[in-house]
Length: 327
Image (tube, rainbow, N blue to C red):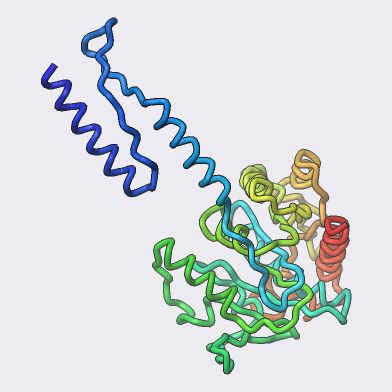
């Protein structure tokens, strides 16, 4: 029995210490040996202590998530996301932003690269250099093709790895959002990092988001992660505007034969399962890859091409879905 009491005292010390760290109220317990088994230990809380715990939990829940604060000057935020990397999310985000302007010249659109570890916007938008500071100590976005852009890639060397822990990444995201002079924008397109981690949660919990666009290839393994991404946005009450099926079909430049390298209609079937709209199909085309690598996105460098038209159709579908959700 002495050993049991010693074990109980150690457990009680550990519980009290952990409670002080996480903020859970310490519950006075008493040691009750079981009549059925003398070696069994049970922890029993008093009724008052249990009610105190329930009240503390209620207060925590009432406190809720961080209050969302709009980005100064930005009317609507559109996030472009994917469950995994390598599905053409950043290329889609860039051409979506340019497509929004191409469809309506009166609209002002900005582009934020939230992929801190692997920023792609500087390369895709052919931008280099460090942002200047305003009199209010805000960073001025770099501009190309009429689109103001901000990225971690403007603040570090092009090939420098960003080896940061979570808290540093969160701080960087906060600065990219709040300490930038965006001016007045109708739309801010955010190129999210792949996956469903800290950055996604931080952004969705801190700024109001008009809607999310999920990018995926038709491949089954990509669709699994795309579904996780869509479900994440639903859990944080962000409207999923729809899916974009990227690299949907390859057309041979010699004979025009079409091949579905990654499968066909996988994203369309997922959209039906999730009950969201299919925003459009983007082909697997050499023109998209070459123009992206040159920093001359296809929407501006080949505006009359079928590939540019596909992105403009996606942009039109996004605007239509935004209007439907705002009613």
